[in-house]
Image: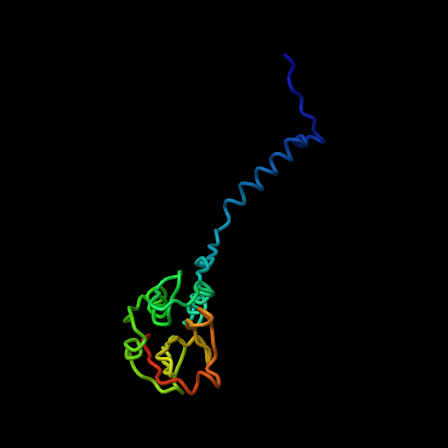
Length: 172
């Protein structure tokens, strides 16, 4: 068997062995250094911070009911009258039970002045044709079931404003 001869320069360690020795010292030296603890802050995962407003919820309800035709005594998407729409919307969106008729609904909650009305308030109208009710969605926009056009958004304009009889707050 042949023996392995190592070459050396001027009686020093062989080059390959010298490099190996240096690498060992380098790796061993890194384990001796004092360890510095780096604290990284724990960042919680992002949470859904969007909280829908009453207006957002009512507009969502409008999209779900838009185009449903008016039907006297109706309470579902096959056909709905104004008080049936209010009853369904408040039940679905806010888990609030309203009476069946617009007259009884107009007495629910707390009466508020028109200058204090806000989204979610019931707006009650009277006319020679009878009673009508809707819900305020935005500043002067309300959601209701129109006898001629079905579920729509309308504004408190020259037609509706003079017919407005009361505003009731049923949401706290």
